[in-house]
Length: 178
Image 1 (cartoon, rainbow, N blue to C red):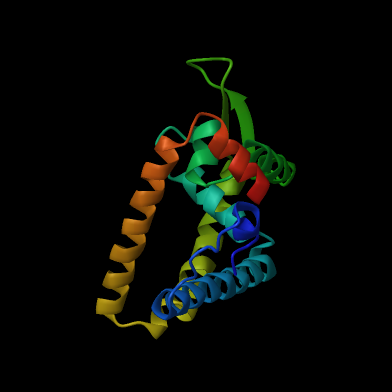
Image 2 (spheres, rainbow, N blue to C red; image 1 turned 120 degrees about the horizontal axis):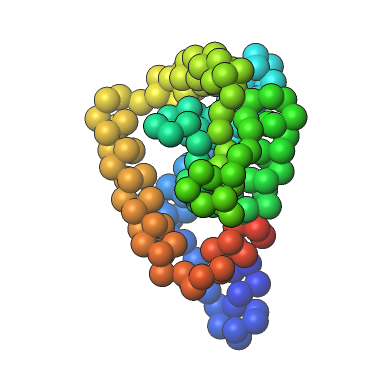
């Protein structure tokens, strides 16, 4: 369970205790299963993936209608190269466009097209119904609130970690994940 780290260091990495293992495995299995279900339902109904819908929703929610590529990559936790491939694919489908930033021509903005906005609105209906059906229907209101608080705390600690990582290291680590 040490992933090879203890063999390299000569020591044994501490294992997760029973409560940690149970919590982590339940969380991970839930994320993987719900993500797979969402991807399948979004693909079947709209020929979009979950990350496509997240990206379109992010662009649709932008007051300016466009988001700088680096900001978008950070918001979606994607490496720049993975975001570029995703944007290119969505451009080919007519859902997004890339334009130069009016304030700094060196920066590229991703913008949602009117077709992309319509597609996102339709997909969000499927997305919301699926999340409610496959995730929230199994929980009570207090459990939903506790999950929101717990995940919020984890996200805040990850953001602090993100800000402490040396420049470029987060992108390299993200690229390895992509």
